[in-house]
Image 1 (tube, rainbow, N blue to C red):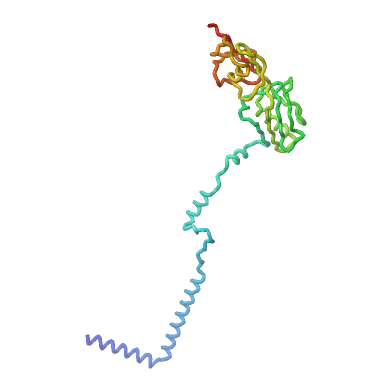
Image 2: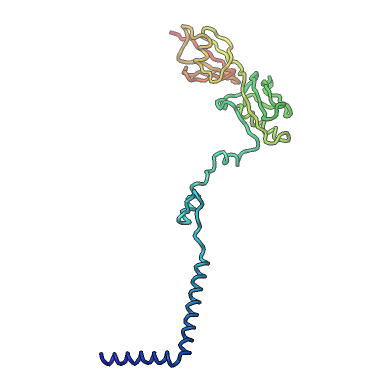
Length: 255
C-alpha cells in the first residue's frame, strides 16, 4: 500500500511539473482537444438537421402504419367493374329494346300492328302493320321481314340496317300494339274470332267465348298454331298458352 501511494505521488508531481514547466505544450493540447469537440458537435447538429421529418397526415385522415396496409386498403376500396361495363365492351354498335320480355317467344304475323321508335329520329319512328307479304315497310331502309320472327329479332335487323350508312349507333325499340286475333270453336257458348291479349291461355279464351257447353270435353283441347296445317291435341291445363292466329277447338265428350 505504501509503495502504491508513493508511485501515485510521483505521477501527480510529474504532471504538475509538466503543467508548470511546459505551459505552451499544455495550451496547445487543450486547443486541439477543443477544436475536435467543436467539429464533432457541428457534425452531429448537421446530421440531425438533414434528417427527413415524418410526414404529417392531413386533417381527417389517418396515416397508414405500414405500406402493405395502405396498399391493401386501396385495393379493397377500388370500385368493382360493373356488369354493364363488361357487357358494353363486347356489344355491337347500337341499342335494341323490346318493351315486353315475354314477347321473345311470340312470332309476328300478318296484320300485327307495331310501334317502332328510333331515338332522336322522329321521321323514322311510327306505327306500322305487317303486310300480307309478311314485311314491314320502313323509311330509309325499306322492307324488313317480320312474319315468323320474334320482335327482338326484328329490332336487331332494323338496328343493323340503320347502322349501315344511315345512323351512328342507332337505338331502336319496338312495341306490339295490336295482335292478330285468335279463333275458338267447338263446344263453347259463343265460338268465333276474338282479339288477342298478351299472356292469353286456353281457359281465358273459353271465358271470352262465355264458357263451355254441357257437352264439352274438359280434359283435352285441340289447337292449330298459326302457320301450321294440322291441329294438335293437348291436355286442357290452366296455363296452356294461346298465341295470335291460333285456332282453339273444344271437343265433345261421348258420355
